[in-house]
Amino acid sequence: MSRFLAVTLFLMIATCFSVTTEASAAEVVHFQCKEWKAKHIHDAKKATAIAGTLKKLGCEVKEEQHNGHLDVKYRCVKERTLPVKSHAEAVKWEKWFKEYGFKVYHTH
Image 1 (tube, helix red, strand yellow):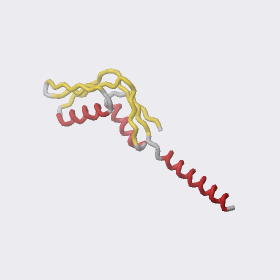
Image 2 (cartoon, rainbow, N blue to C red):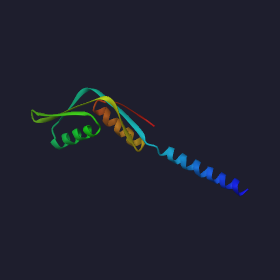
Image 3 (cartoon, one colour):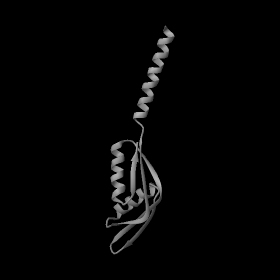
Image 4 (cartoon, rainbow, N blue to C red):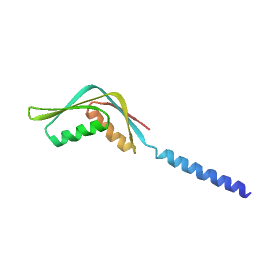
């Protein structure tokens, strides 16, 4: 009888642990921008921050200065992924990518 209780308890704990692990699994944002896009930015710090973010995401980035503003040009020919911790974060990134002209979606 005690073996039966021990096995049952073990299975219950293992099941609870695996459900908790699956429930907290990250979502993944998929993004791509095959053609070159450009953002015209008048704030140098903002331009540097945007270019840095795009580079960290694995995009090709070119920065050009002319006529009193900066152009941040970018593309990401191959589809890339960005793991995120929550659905809300995935939605936030999707909105950001769409604002910059990326094809984007996320998976659970």
